[in-house]
Length: 207
Image (spheres, rainbow, N blue to C red):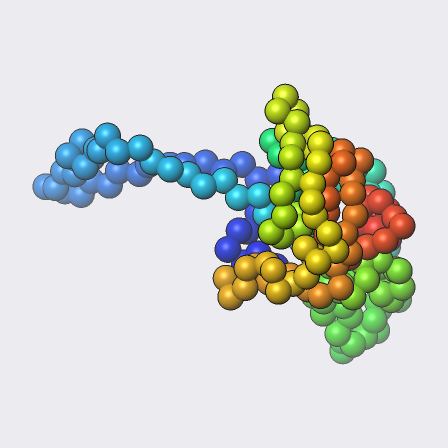
Protein backbone atom coordinates (compact mmCIF):
# COMPACT_ATOMS: atom_id res chain seq x y z
CA UNK A 1 0.00 0.00 0.00
CA UNK A 2 2.68 2.40 0.98
CA UNK A 3 3.18 5.13 -1.64
CA UNK A 4 5.84 6.53 0.69
CA UNK A 5 8.14 3.53 0.76
CA UNK A 6 11.05 5.57 2.02
CA UNK A 7 9.24 6.84 5.07
CA UNK A 8 7.83 3.85 6.99
CA UNK A 9 6.01 4.77 10.20
CA UNK A 10 4.36 2.48 12.74
CA UNK A 11 1.58 3.86 14.93
CA UNK A 12 2.48 4.12 18.60
CA UNK A 13 6.08 3.04 18.13
CA UNK A 14 8.87 4.72 20.05
CA UNK A 15 12.01 5.27 17.99
CA UNK A 16 15.23 4.93 19.93
CA UNK A 17 18.83 5.37 18.97
CA UNK A 18 21.19 2.86 20.56
CA UNK A 19 24.96 2.72 20.57
CA UNK A 20 26.29 -0.79 20.98
CA UNK A 21 29.93 -1.44 21.77
CA UNK A 22 31.28 -4.90 21.08
CA UNK A 23 34.38 -6.29 22.78
CA UNK A 24 35.94 -9.66 22.08
CA UNK A 25 38.71 -11.49 23.89
CA UNK A 26 42.03 -9.71 23.43
CA UNK A 27 40.45 -6.85 21.44
CA UNK A 28 39.24 -3.41 22.53
CA UNK A 29 37.36 -0.84 20.48
CA UNK A 30 37.28 2.89 21.19
CA UNK A 31 34.69 5.29 19.80
CA UNK A 32 36.48 8.44 21.00
CA UNK A 33 38.83 8.49 18.00
CA UNK A 34 35.87 8.89 15.62
CA UNK A 35 34.14 11.75 17.42
CA UNK A 36 33.63 14.78 15.18
CA UNK A 37 32.45 18.28 15.94
CA UNK A 38 30.56 18.51 12.64
CA UNK A 39 26.84 19.03 13.25
CA UNK A 40 24.53 16.17 12.38
CA UNK A 41 21.52 17.25 10.33
CA UNK A 42 18.39 15.14 10.76
CA UNK A 43 15.69 15.71 8.14
CA UNK A 44 12.18 15.55 9.54
CA UNK A 45 9.68 13.80 7.31
CA UNK A 46 6.05 14.85 7.20
CA UNK A 47 4.88 11.72 5.43
CA UNK A 48 3.03 9.11 7.44
CA UNK A 49 1.76 5.76 6.16
CA UNK A 50 -0.50 3.72 8.43
CA UNK A 51 -1.68 0.16 7.85
CA UNK A 52 -4.37 -1.18 10.18
CA UNK A 53 -4.74 -4.97 10.31
CA UNK A 54 -8.16 -5.64 11.84
CA UNK A 55 -9.11 -8.86 13.57
CA UNK A 56 -12.59 -9.36 12.11
CA UNK A 57 -13.43 -12.59 13.91
CA UNK A 58 -16.74 -12.81 15.78
CA UNK A 59 -15.08 -12.18 19.16
CA UNK A 60 -13.38 -8.91 18.18
CA UNK A 61 -16.31 -6.48 18.04
CA UNK A 62 -15.31 -4.74 21.29
CA UNK A 63 -11.68 -4.07 20.24
CA UNK A 64 -12.96 -2.80 16.88
CA UNK A 65 -15.27 -0.36 18.62
CA UNK A 66 -12.40 0.82 20.81
CA UNK A 67 -10.21 1.38 17.76
CA UNK A 68 -12.82 3.47 15.94
CA UNK A 69 -13.50 5.53 19.07
CA UNK A 70 -9.79 6.25 19.54
CA UNK A 71 -9.07 7.06 15.89
CA UNK A 72 -10.30 10.63 16.35
CA UNK A 73 -7.78 11.05 19.17
CA UNK A 74 -5.00 9.76 16.91
CA UNK A 75 -5.93 12.31 14.24
CA UNK A 76 -6.07 15.05 16.87
CA UNK A 77 -2.53 14.26 18.01
CA UNK A 78 -1.31 14.30 14.40
CA UNK A 79 -2.97 17.69 13.87
CA UNK A 80 -1.13 19.03 16.92
CA UNK A 81 2.29 18.36 15.38
CA UNK A 82 4.29 21.37 14.10
CA UNK A 83 2.93 22.28 10.70
CA UNK A 84 -0.38 20.55 11.32
CA UNK A 85 -1.63 17.29 9.84
CA UNK A 86 1.16 15.48 7.95
CA UNK A 87 0.74 13.79 4.57
CA UNK A 88 -1.31 10.66 5.24
CA UNK A 89 -1.90 7.36 3.51
CA UNK A 90 -4.11 5.00 5.52
CA UNK A 91 -4.92 1.42 4.57
CA UNK A 92 -7.07 -1.23 6.26
CA UNK A 93 -7.03 -4.99 5.86
CA UNK A 94 -8.09 -7.93 8.02
CA UNK A 95 -6.67 -11.12 9.47
CA UNK A 96 -9.10 -13.20 7.39
CA UNK A 97 -7.04 -15.51 5.17
CA UNK A 98 -9.80 -18.07 4.72
CA UNK A 99 -10.29 -21.43 6.38
CA UNK A 100 -9.73 -23.78 3.44
CA UNK A 101 -9.89 -26.74 3.33
CA UNK A 102 -11.97 -26.68 6.54
CA UNK A 103 -15.58 -25.59 6.97
CA UNK A 104 -15.91 -23.24 9.94
CA UNK A 105 -19.08 -21.23 10.66
CA UNK A 106 -18.70 -17.52 9.78
CA UNK A 107 -15.39 -18.17 7.98
CA UNK A 108 -14.88 -18.19 4.25
CA UNK A 109 -13.44 -21.41 2.94
CA UNK A 110 -11.40 -19.78 0.20
CA UNK A 111 -8.72 -17.11 0.52
CA UNK A 112 -10.66 -14.70 2.70
CA UNK A 113 -9.49 -11.10 2.30
CA UNK A 114 -6.01 -12.26 1.38
CA UNK A 115 -4.32 -9.25 2.94
CA UNK A 116 -5.86 -6.90 0.36
CA UNK A 117 -6.66 -3.30 1.24
CA UNK A 118 -10.39 -2.93 1.81
CA UNK A 119 -13.08 -0.24 1.72
CA UNK A 120 -15.27 -1.76 4.39
CA UNK A 121 -17.16 -5.03 4.33
CA UNK A 122 -17.43 -6.22 0.72
CA UNK A 123 -15.74 -2.94 -0.32
CA UNK A 124 -19.09 -1.19 0.03
CA UNK A 125 -17.88 2.18 1.37
CA UNK A 126 -18.36 5.24 -0.83
CA UNK A 127 -15.01 6.68 0.24
CA UNK A 128 -12.16 6.74 -0.53
CA UNK A 129 -12.77 7.33 -4.23
CA UNK A 130 -10.53 5.64 -6.78
CA UNK A 131 -8.31 3.75 -4.33
CA UNK A 132 -8.69 1.26 -1.51
CA UNK A 133 -6.62 3.44 0.82
CA UNK A 134 -7.11 6.95 2.16
CA UNK A 135 -5.01 9.79 0.77
CA UNK A 136 -4.91 13.15 2.60
CA UNK A 137 -1.84 15.20 1.65
CA UNK A 138 -0.55 18.73 1.15
CA UNK A 139 -0.82 20.07 -2.43
CA UNK A 140 2.38 20.26 -4.47
CA UNK A 141 4.22 23.34 -5.70
CA UNK A 142 2.07 26.05 -4.17
CA UNK A 143 2.62 28.53 -1.34
CA UNK A 144 0.93 28.25 2.04
CA UNK A 145 1.26 31.07 4.59
CA UNK A 146 1.01 29.81 8.15
CA UNK A 147 0.44 31.67 11.39
CA UNK A 148 3.77 32.50 13.06
CA UNK A 149 2.53 31.62 16.53
CA UNK A 150 0.51 28.55 15.58
CA UNK A 151 1.93 26.69 12.59
CA UNK A 152 -1.17 24.52 12.41
CA UNK A 153 -3.20 27.49 11.14
CA UNK A 154 -3.05 28.59 7.51
CA UNK A 155 -3.67 32.28 6.81
CA UNK A 156 -3.45 32.23 3.02
CA UNK A 157 -2.55 29.93 0.14
CA UNK A 158 -2.47 30.04 -3.65
CA UNK A 159 -3.16 26.32 -4.19
CA UNK A 160 -5.68 25.27 -6.81
CA UNK A 161 -7.01 21.94 -8.07
CA UNK A 162 -4.03 21.78 -10.44
CA UNK A 163 -1.72 21.40 -7.44
CA UNK A 164 -3.27 17.99 -6.73
CA UNK A 165 -2.18 16.63 -10.12
CA UNK A 166 -0.01 13.51 -9.62
CA UNK A 167 2.49 14.79 -12.18
CA UNK A 168 3.52 17.53 -9.75
CA UNK A 169 4.52 15.16 -6.96
CA UNK A 170 7.94 13.46 -6.83
CA UNK A 171 8.08 10.16 -8.66
CA UNK A 172 10.44 7.23 -8.78
CA UNK A 173 11.30 7.39 -5.08
CA UNK A 174 8.14 5.84 -3.73
CA UNK A 175 6.31 9.16 -3.47
CA UNK A 176 3.91 8.69 -6.39
CA UNK A 177 0.40 9.96 -5.79
CA UNK A 178 -2.76 8.66 -7.48
CA UNK A 179 -4.84 10.58 -10.00
CA UNK A 180 -8.21 12.04 -9.09
CA UNK A 181 -7.30 13.82 -5.85
CA UNK A 182 -9.50 16.83 -5.10
CA UNK A 183 -8.56 20.08 -3.39
CA UNK A 184 -10.20 20.80 -0.04
CA UNK A 185 -9.63 23.30 2.77
CA UNK A 186 -9.55 21.83 6.27
CA UNK A 187 -10.85 23.36 9.50
CA UNK A 188 -7.56 25.21 10.01
CA UNK A 189 -7.77 26.87 6.61
CA UNK A 190 -5.07 24.65 5.14
CA UNK A 191 -5.31 23.17 1.62
CA UNK A 192 -5.36 19.39 1.29
CA UNK A 193 -5.52 16.94 -1.60
CA UNK A 194 -7.90 14.08 -0.73
CA UNK A 195 -9.54 11.07 -2.30
CA UNK A 196 -12.63 11.23 -0.09
CA UNK A 197 -15.59 13.59 -0.23
CA UNK A 198 -18.41 14.84 2.06
CA UNK A 199 -17.17 12.84 5.02
CA UNK A 200 -14.66 13.44 7.78
CA UNK A 201 -11.45 11.46 7.95
CA UNK A 202 -12.83 9.65 11.00
CA UNK A 203 -16.05 8.71 9.20
CA UNK A 204 -14.15 7.34 6.21
CA UNK A 205 -11.89 5.28 8.46
CA UNK A 206 -14.82 3.95 10.52
CA UNK A 207 -16.53 2.70 7.36
